[in-house]
Image 1 (tube, rainbow, N blue to C red):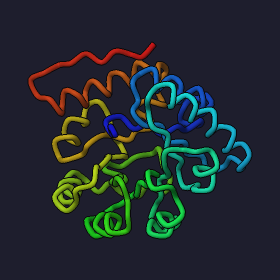
Image 2: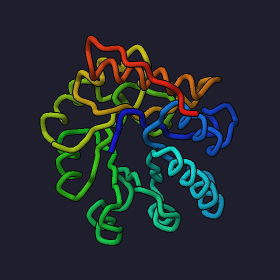
Image 3: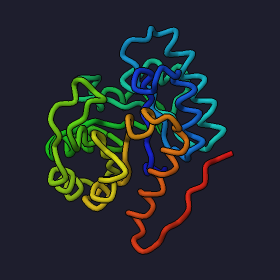
Image 4: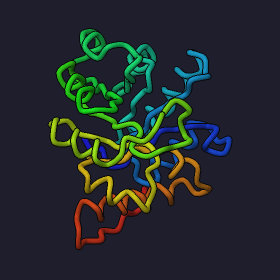
Length: 219
């Protein structure tokens, strides 16, 4: 599974565009993973939206992750769920999900990363790497040194989230991230597809120094 470009939808940051529309444009730009995150939407609306996005990710060959809501993820057949430190324990979630179900975990330290791996997480998200205004509860940035330390402590894929831009993505990949999870840098742009394609190109360059592979938007 590719973790290069991980897009989190947000209707407020997305200039009022729907989760579905934001996901569609991000997939056109080459997003590898779409996460549906909405703290205000009721369960019925979340279910309908998740079903729509899942269909699009299937068509695009991408992955669909539900934020927090394991019930919605299981009901829709999502590829996985992303859990924070205050959500259901990973070990308990692992007991009730299908064998190939993906569980991601937000972590902020080496100890949390190690515990998440022991508990059965499939990937880690260091959140936030840099200070960000996209999430009110994100807290201070943990920095690249924490990212590097987590990289040394675990074999799991790591996505960096929080304050990721085209200007700093190279340093994030260089510090050990397998990919970037972004909101504002893509969803907040006028042309979401173009922003996604450019960031994915930057990630490819950072992972392959000396090469500049073109990243084409999907048709």
